[in-house]
Length: 99
Image 1 (cartoon, helix red, strand yellow):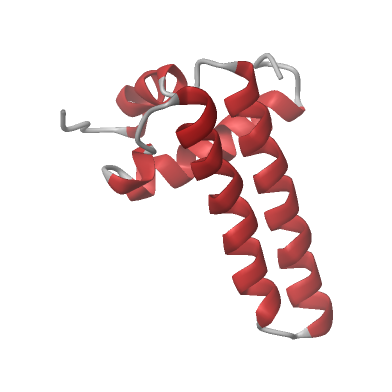
Image 2 (cartoon, rainbow, N blue to C red):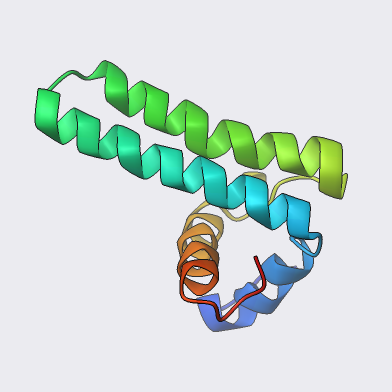
């Protein structure tokens, strides 16, 4: 399916992350990715960028393979999926989405 807007895509994204364990693993990966980004800014060491990508995508893809048993939306909708990751992260952080 082709989505014309992020607003139309996000309900699909949430269905692809229906299990709490999937959302939790995404949250951990995103949080570690942010810490790596902070380390990159503080140290200037480019390896932190690689570490952040491995953390962020590694935890997410592992969740899809082992928990949700579906194909990550990243492969079909890379930009919307990236946006969805951060919206879901924020909603979990603020209590708007069950952690």
